[in-house]
Length: 282
Length: 328
Ligand SMILES: Cc1cc2nc3c(=O)[nH]c(=O)nc-3n(C[C@H](O)[C@H](O)[C@H](O)COP(=O)(O)OP(=O)(O)OC[C@H]3O[C@@H](n4cnc5c(N)ncnc54)[C@H](O)[C@@H]3O)c2cc1C
Ligand SMILES: Nc1ncnc2c1ncn2[C@@H]1O[C@H](COP(=O)(O)O)[C@@H](O)[C@H]1O
Image (cartoon, chains in turn red, green):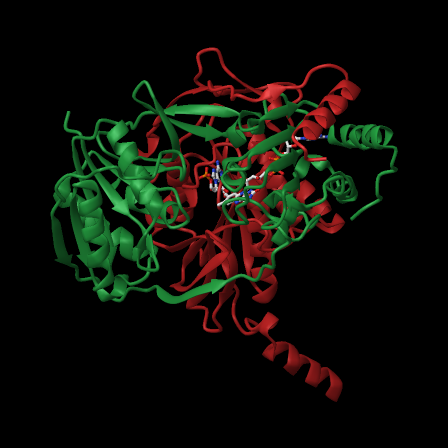
């Protein structure tokens, strides 16, 4: 009996369960679906959109996997927390939301955009803001960047639209005991981190390597299978939100000056060694 | 149409970042007519930097000072700049795409309710060019509103200012910003030991394309062919735990310039390229003929790492008559 009490006391005082007496955090994670590899995509003839082929496999944006894991870690630290996962896009992105549920998110939201066309960061952020505005989130996590469009914008714009404090490229976070502030370390160039404390509610864009994303557990996979995904119809938070500055897509023009080695694999191996020898490297 | 530009100067440790000067050349490339630098900071350092900018570029500088601006922080920059640009009314607000640049640029754009175009690498036919899909796709952008925030990829333009005429003016503007809700604690160097990059003549680097942790052995065996070599990696490989972060090369890792760099299964994302592009000779091995790395490479080999490296090792030992070492 005494041992149990002592263990409980220890748990409550330890760092990991500092939120033992809180009612938990209300957390939103933004997840984007991206094609698994760039060699299954092409640009449409009118250069207006990316075309996917039958071989295109979609997956979660890797930075969002780190964001989701971080949200689940916060939830474990603050019992009673809830993690929502949201994705904006056509029907197929429901798969990404489902994946987030399988990994451990409690609730999934799909903001429907009918076409598969490029949607600007301002529009995506406005759509997420339109949904999140009334849901009372304490913490919103996004990836630092989407691997497909590489814009590094949606998180920051979303923060601005919701008047949340914001930090990008986050490699460490810790919410204070009173849940009013959050300490973050953001990675800047040259192996240096900038350390700041933000007022909550806050939005963090998460950099890869902050944690080790977990795999879905069997029980979560079972639960997610039958779980409803909330469908939110697009409600942009303002007028400029249908902005679009990307006007054309294409392939890089500059081919580079490199020389392609040709022939059989063995030919290439021999040629490479020949080159290295000539350069006195070996 | 008026073509007025604001360039937001970024600095660190009392020094102007070279990316600021790169932006000056970017703006001149766009035919910028009216250029104004804006620099934020605390006295006295910021005044010296403002004067340096004005002298080296012959351009006018607005220098916003506050003791709260000693260090960069997003909300401070957003608030001060939002106020300032409403008086300068620029067409484009140009910001380096560095860790602080992309931190506040979208905030400022959203606060001003104007579009933001990030990580611009080139200008072609008056359109901004930026990479997507790890450099596989190029997007053309034109702001859909009369003014916009632009961030420019570091290294995309030359950084030197070749100006030698009369200096610009410096306008000092003390700004009143409330202490704000952000507390800045300062900087922290994340631990990393050298893995011998400085001494290495040859760096063999692993990307996600090596497929599995076991194949790091292949990379090590290839590196062992060279007397002074080191093992590098992309961030992706370090995130997967296949190699430690001290091996990471790129904008958030090590910057290297060996005589020979062999990129194995690396796509060639700009964040990686910026850490190794000054290598003398670059050999890239990748299954995807269109991988961006081939645009930087000296020698391009479209092959599968898993079969090609063993072939090279085999061929090497056949030539030299020596069996190749297992690992280093
Ligand atoms: C703020 C920020 C900072 C970053 N800093 C860095 C940094 O410092 N360093 C860094 O490296 N990255 C950095 N990144 C990540 C960067 O954007 C890329 O995601 C990363 O470099 C990709 O690593 P990769 O090339 O190993 O993997 P991928 O992009 O997944 O490429 C794998 C490549 O392997 C090829 N391939 C697949 N199978 C084979 C095979 N069998 N044989 C041969 N080739 C094969 C594929 O065609 C593909 O081109 C940063 C990102 C951000 C947002
Ligand atoms: N369509 C989307 N749906 C949900 N989240 C998104 C979407 N687009 C971007 N995000 C989030 O914003 C981050 C940055 O994306 P970007 O600004 O597009 O590089 C991503 O890592 C996601 O977390």
